Length: 275
Image 1 (cartoon, rainbow, N blue to C red):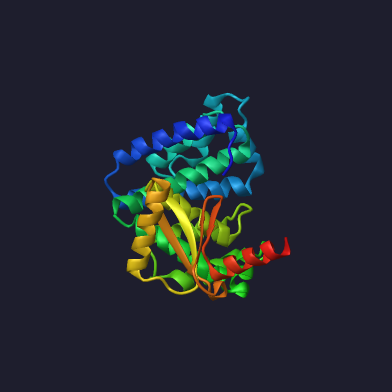
Image 2: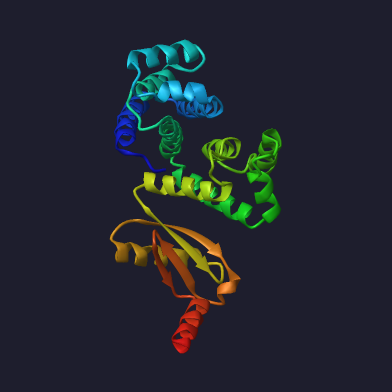
C-alpha cells in the first residue's frame, strides 16, 4: 500500500485512535467484530464511488462528512467502529481511494491485534502463507478465485471448502475479505502481503525460502539464528519446497536474494563461461 503524505498522516492518527479503543476492549470477539465491520465499510465504499468521493473530499467540511457517516452507519455498526470511521472521514486524505486503503489497513490491524492477544499471530502468519502456496500451486483454483467476472458467492464457497474448520478465525476473515473485495490485488500476492503484515506486527522481517527438500525443525531454527545474526533483526521464515532447485536454498529477504541452490550456482557458472 502506497500512501501520499496527507494520507500517511491521516492513517497514523486513525491508527492511534484504533489502538486506544483496542486497549479499552477486553473482548476478543469485539476486536473481530471491529475488523469485520470496517471491512464491510470498505466493501460499501468500493461499490459506491459517489459515497467514496463524498467521504474522501478533503475540500468539504469535516463536520459534514462526520454527519454523513453517523447518518448512514449509526446503529448499523458498533460504537467503536463508528468512532474509528469518524476519525477516518474527518481527516484529510490525498484521495478517496487512499481513504479506503486506510480503512482496509485499520481493519487488518484490528484483526491481527486480536490474533496477537490470543497468542495466535504465529499461526495466522503461517496459515496465510501456506494458503497462498496451496492456491499458487493449483492453476485452476487460482484462476477461479481471481476471475473478476466470476461469481463472488461461488468464490467464497470454494474458499470456505478449503479453510473451514482448518484455520484460525482471523485467517478466515482476512482471506475471505481478500477474495470478496480484492481491490485490484491477486489472491496469491494478497495472501503473501497479509502474511508479511502479520510478521511485521511482531517486528520481524520475512525470509522467503525455497528449498530443494523439506527442512526439519532443527534446520529451520539454525537458519533463523543465522539470518537473525546476519541482518541484526528477528527473521520469520516462510519455506517452500521446490525440487527444481536440485539442492540447497534460495533465500529472498526484501530485495536481497541469497542463492545457495545448486541450480543457482550452475546458472552463475554458465553466465561466467558465456562471458
